[in-house]
Every structure is written in structure tokens, then in C-alpha cells.
Image 1 (cartoon, rainbow, N blue to C red):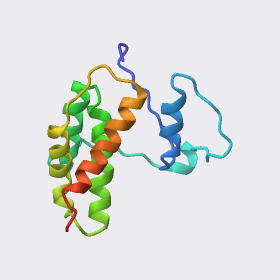
Image 2: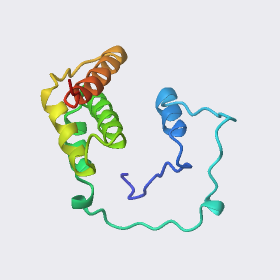
Image 3: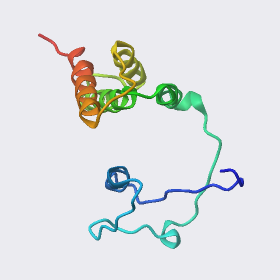
Length: 136
């Protein structure tokens, strides 16, 4: 921020929070079905510099996020498929980043897009990533 401060979005580890945030942005909506985050109950928070070698997907995700367009949707779809393949024992953990990048490189990015385009791109990425591992 211009004044040197940092604003943090903190919640319990539950994807419903960021999904709700994204759906209603910039508005904030109360949802009594979601648990509230308590700084008191959270305990101590510690921050350390990130080691990019431990998180190879991070730099790749930042690269494509800066380009923008439908790459973000493709990244999400390819990531979901790669994790599913890993969970099914069809992909090693250290192969996840490469699988995602293969799909990103195969994508014909749209700079201007609609929500429908983003959904189509994410679905395409999911199916494309899975298809590389289908055995006949």
C-alpha cells in the first residue's frame, strides 16, 4: 500500500471463504453458515521468507497471472486435474508443476473474456491435463 501498511485477508482453511469473497467482490456479505475466524483462537502467526525452490508452482502461477486473460482459469483447471491425478497415483508429486505448465503452453489465451469463457477455459484445461494420462 502507498502508506507502507499491509491488509490481510484471514480466514479458517476453508475454500468457501475465498469463493464467497470472489463471487461478491467488491461487496462483503455475511454468511452465517461459515465459521468466523478468531485471532485469539488462531494463536501465534509466524511469517518467513518463501523459498521458491520448495514451491515451483508459485513462480509459474505469478508469471501467468501477470499475463492475465484466461490463463488464470486454465491454471485453476490444470491444477485441479494434476492434483486429482496425483491423488489417484497416476502422477508423482514432483510432476504436478510440469503438467500444469504443459496445459498452459497449449492454451490459446483470450485477453478479453467473459465468465463463460473462463469456465470453458478451466474445463478445457482440466480435461486436457487428464487426457494426457488416459491409458487405452
